View (cartoon, rainbow, N blue to C red):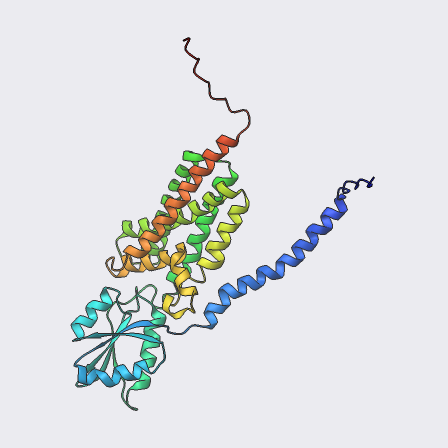
Length: 341
């Protein structure tokens, strides 16, 4: 008869502490490596990748310019326009970041620093390299950034605080034990206040934004709601670990992949694409559109933020409903008495 296997001995408190110590020591370098990859890798690989750029003028005159630009393998996505007016319209519609207009006096560069000061500066350098030595192309900023933020640094710096505010609101709602409609109401109220405070600072005080005040407040509120609802929704479905997962997703990936300080087309793939699917990147694109371009190209990022907010709030409500169903001691459903036959 085989000897029965004795049950495993429970770990002592000292063994548990040692296991946690090893886990912390091993996790720290992993987190550092992940953070450096997320933040440093895109910054170290900034370069144009299929950057939309216009070329305007007669076909015979623009052909050499287009060929020179296309020699920079994969850098630009060239759009042809008949004249300068059409190129300006394309820039204002956010179809292209800039345009080279061929004139009798020489090339003229149209830029939009409001779309990206980094791209505007890069286009100036690229066009200057292709003009004859001793000549300087004329540059016109069709849609300039605000006078209070000429380099766009304050605009880029506003992305992370909004993400952190959203993460904080989702975490507080979870830690306070709010569920269902109360949690959703708290997230909506917090997002509305965050949007108004952020607009008061960036628009009214610092002069970073120049669009309609209430439209900008709506964008910033929607951003905070999208992040907060995502964090609270993940926590409602997966437990406290969902807060960490949501925070890592938004802060560790969403912020460096947003392209707020450069442009999505300057980031290595797939970072630029992923960034526009996450709330920080969608928020930066939408805020540029409503603040400087009269809402041009706003539909895509607005839908992205709306989906994040709707799915997050839905997860909050679903998690609350599932918790009520699993809660012990819930009253059983009464059966209808059988009719005497």
